Figure 1 (cartoon, rainbow, N blue to C red):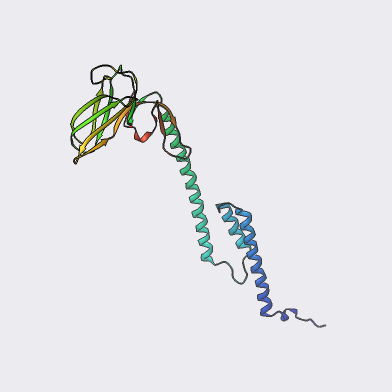
Figure 2: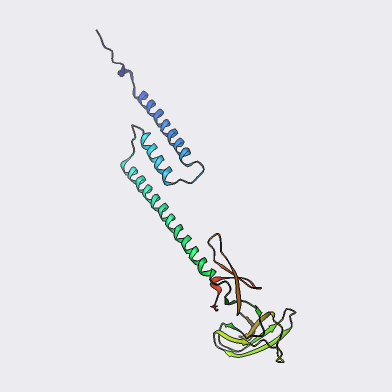
Length: 240
């Protein structure tokens, strides 16, 4: 009885041919796993792990996964998971911060604040206090108060001022000493710097009606009665 050796008929080309088929299968398997795991979304840690396992299961027998490359992939997976956890933590902190800031800002509703503005709603039966921002020492600062018709009702000479916030008080009266009607008035401060007339910023009081919370993580805005909105960071003073 004779036994024939069928394995001797396999040549090196046959082995390489079988190997190339396996390699093609490996590439197809990875492509299929990539499509299944990620779809149209960004590669996350679950998809990364699924691709890594698929790659190990479909290795080329003649070119197995290098140990160094495998360790590098595990390190990448660990880094990816750490970054995802960090993003989750930071998002939670940001959400808590926004909630805390909104709660603090809501306590300002109904209160008076002093913020940069050139207009103020004035109750002329009471005195109004404000400041003028002086960029450098000047010899003279002039403040003009005008009504809604553009008529100047009062001019206040604030004299020489050093750099900083120069305070002023308006008693609600015009230049002749008569109390003007309550309403919205404009305040314009000016001075001469280096031989040129320069307009100066005024900080005026206003009442907070409501607070606008940004949905994109932006700054909180205070809605002032009759004057529009101002960023919370611009507020100079918070009163009663």
